[in-house]
Length: 162
Ligand SMILES: NC(=O)N[C@@H](O)C(=O)O
Ligand code: NI
Image 1: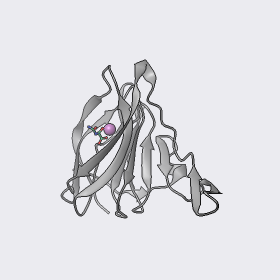
Image 2: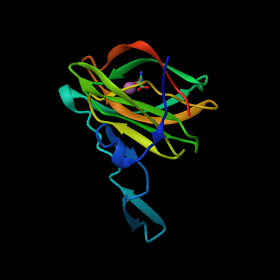
Image 3: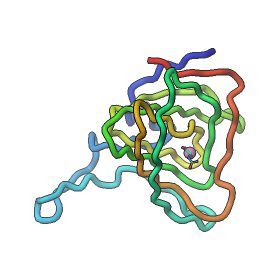
């Protein structure tokens, strides 16, 4: 069993895979007569390929048993996919760069609780890995015709442990 030790989720470390959705480092401006701060343009939504459209969803995720066992990696060839937690609770993010059409080296991250992630179109990632309790996430991804899911079972058993 191979063990991945998750690294803290940061915009710089996650850059090859997409965006970290957070207020830290974001362009911000006061709006609504100064009653609200707008944290502007936090992630690149890319869902229009082949006539796609934006979906706003809510995922209610069961917590994974720990140590978390990884089963497969997947990617969405036609669109980005963003996850925004509705509670301040850490979750795992597992991604990989492409290696000739299959996932390369796995990278595991742990969020600080509030951080969201936006996977760039066609980036390998593990399906949502919620921890500790049932967790709700707003998910922004692509709807429309075409095959937008490619899965790749992991050849070896992998788990995440802090
Ligand atoms: N199936 C589904 O919409 N969810 C996955 O894409 C995921 O990344 O969790
Ligand atoms: Ni996905």
